[in-house]
Image 1 (cartoon, rainbow, N blue to C red):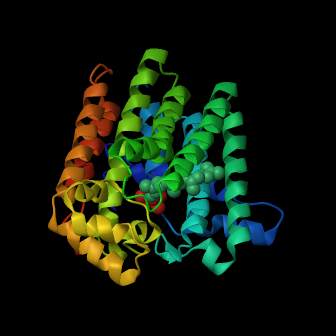
Image 2 (cartoon, rainbow, N blue to C red):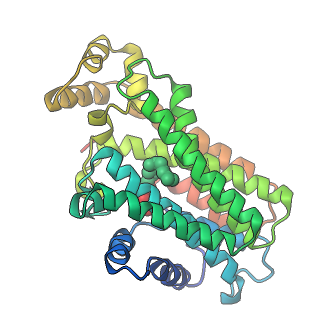
Length: 331
Ligand code: GRG
């Protein structure tokens, strides 16, 4: 997925992200060579660094000279790295849950080193994220800890409806709000906190992040059905095969007798391919994109009261472009 970065307006966004990268990589270093190597594996593989970019962006909303290099405070970089480490740890665990073989265009840790190694390295990354947040004060540490809890809650909600053709749209939205929306919300909030934002404005950027995150996950779920493997850097069609019935599937199930029958059985890869065909033939994809767009519109509305400036414009543009930049035509 390509997405427009909320810090695209900065004089040198690459230089900002280089500061994130330096601290990110150094956070994976520890006395054990193997743990260091495994923990750095997905960091080195790349990724969009979207959550850190949101944290950097919101940290500069109230800044007096947001276009200068000085506008980026060390605390904002630390918050940005902390949220990316949580994201990384959750990817390690997610790949174990899915038995995934590739991620970010490289072999997953579970596939290359083993499941136990991936779980432990994921835990280690969470620990490092917690250390960084604690260094920013009790409020940040508490927020980060709660966020890790919300991610787990979202994942458990998802597991509870696996292979369930009766999964409702509400159940889906509640699960993704926790598993994805929460970390985008926290990224925006921690950035704002690092930038000394008022409590009132913190609430606005948090809600923006939550709504953006919901839209982001819906689009991610659509892409799992329509994009190619090289576009995603991982196998496509994973959700269906794993029995995760996402929004396009839930919508298609409302009118599809054959799809319901198929998904109610212990279907094989041929069944998954037929299910995908049935979903693409209906309005499930369009419907999901519309729901994502509604969340994007709401995200843009929520930040209207914030002081005008390039950082707020960056948030607006990132939201506006989320859907338009995606390869939404089925491969
Ligand atoms: C936090 C201990 C702990 C466990 C987490 C596994 C789990 C419980 C939660 C799953 C969270 C998860 C992986 C949600 C999916 C979020 C998502 C859309 C990931 C892809 O994000 P991108 O596209 O990835 O930003 P890159 O690679 O670009 O960073």
